[in-house]
Length: 164
Image (cartoon, rainbow, N blue to C red):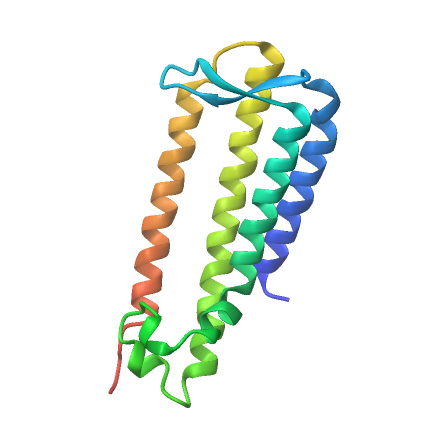
């Protein structure tokens, strides 16, 4: 099994443990949206919050893990990939779909790290009844944007034409 899949599975298990641990500690109505200063400005019941979060994780992970199958369904002309005609030619198609899958699994890893971390900040804010701390949030978002930048560079480098 690829390392990216193992990490995704570990992160999903961490998310599940996170939910199980924090569920009884959270108030029945919790702040689920925060304004620029970290003050809550949107609330959900605990049950709805966790249903939403679990549904979002399922959607994100299906998308990340099933991307080669999803991309493989569409006509090549609908796929936005550098040098797509080259990469989707007969002998390269399978390897290209595999590479797209690996890249999307790593993107899923980044999303899950962000997701679990943001949930921790939301849980902390609700348990302590304090505003959401903006410094850790900005640190997480900056780290995620740096990750996305490196991911994009690696993706475009992978799909450049080295010979034609």
